[in-house]
Image (cartoon, rainbow, N blue to C red; front, top):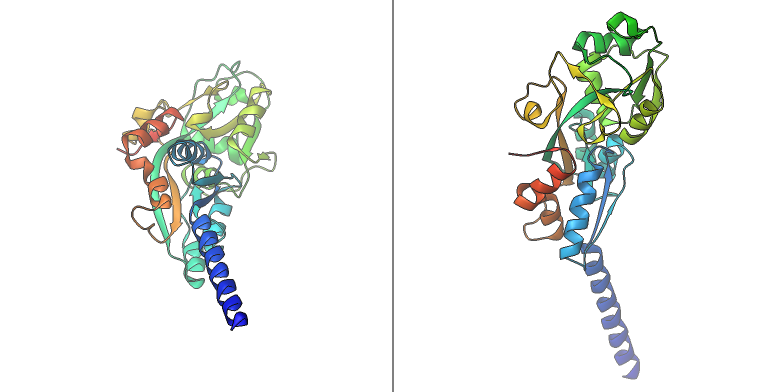
Length: 274
């Protein structure tokens, strides 16, 4: 009888611990992916955790490709991406019985940036393409000084890289002279320190460098909203299925719809969803 009672108590304790662990897991949100969307994800996390101290949100920035992989593998709750998931990624997710749901949390423009001392102010989209494919390799060919162009690109795992390929180089091979770096911040730093450099970054990363107009159109919030600026894009969060209403995950991802969330997006230098 005593043994049965002990077993019953042990079972109840185990169930209690398991329930507590499950409840604890429900209060953890793991976010990974785009370095471009990272500032938004972090601002949302800080805002939400301040109002909900029982929720722990971790945000990593290992690239849009890893955001997709995390959703496919089920290792994260939110995949942040500066491009839409590809057909093959969606198929891979379905193969693992995942259901990626896209949330457009903001809009952005990709700015071509140069060293502040560079006198060039504008490039046509074709000139920008020719610089990145190696057809143009000196600034004097586009009205600048007799100075070799140092081409800085995002790494190939980046959603920003893929959007730039889609909208500018049209999948043509990037010059072998290009230097690849892992984040918007790294592009900005390299351009800041190199008078002949050109790079491309999200709108939130233009401080300290000179953003060129493209086709005489400035990379501004208004021009992104109106789609006048030719290198614009959506910024995304992905979840496995639509988060259940009222959960921390639904509230966190849905912040972009709220007045406070729109302000947070704008404060990070991006364009809120209208």
